[in-house]
Image 1 (cartoon, helix red, strand yellow):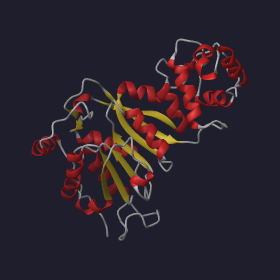
Image 2 (cartoon, helix red, strand yellow; image 1 turned 90 degrees about the vertical axis):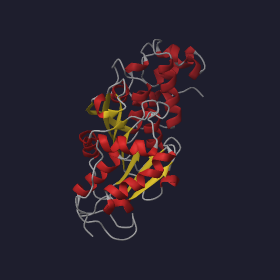
Image 3 (cartoon, helix red, strand yellow; image 1 turned 120 degrees about the vertical axis):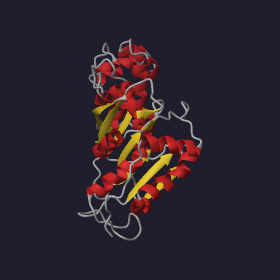
Image 4 (cartoon, one colour; image 1 turned 30 degrees about the horizontal axis):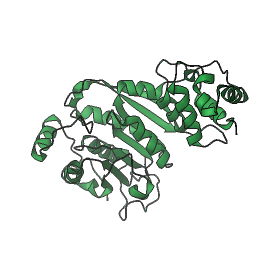
Length: 311
């Protein structure tokens, strides 16, 4: 069959009416701020760069604003859809993404989303799976096959970095993504060595991917209006730096280095290495100045330090 442009996005009036009917009041606990401006969700969907054969993972779909924009992007990406079981057709010219998986922690919103999709994107409803779950606990088994290749999300500010890091670790298939997060969090995620805001989120995300700023989002596009600004972060997965140390061992060095960021690495890594002298030996073996501080190091430096830890 051929999918035509039948996706109807949600506007501010639609979202408030839907929330009222469900008795939903956005809560700070779940970080719920719903996007009510179609142009903003279209911007995220465009940055997701939907391609034939993609499996889209959306975290925190809420009432469905971004979900519908992603499905609209699916329609625009490539007309024909293969009939048959989702995920069985090989990717190739003329095929649209065969699957969108939406992970929603609020059971009321998770139950309503399929109805919203059936009403506003009926021809694509069978391509969407809604999973009522915490994104911090999902993995390949819960999400099923084929595994997600692209992440698109409006993430709660308090869990944005943990969610992205968890998904990149749990889903090796995840090749790229775009997330909307608090402006300060976005700056940290994209920062490089030497930046004032470079820290644990920057270095750990760099283990998995190249992250870059992808635009700003005014607070007025949300309901309720948050007291912080938002930004978009796009990332593309790449191989981690070569090292004999495990990811966990490298992350332990990063945590130690930034746990006392005003201290030199010789002092900050003393407990990790066993003593200041052991820390200095590990640093010199890794080719790192013991008098430097964590914010001066790239993730490859932390990897060399991890593999140089004294026995």
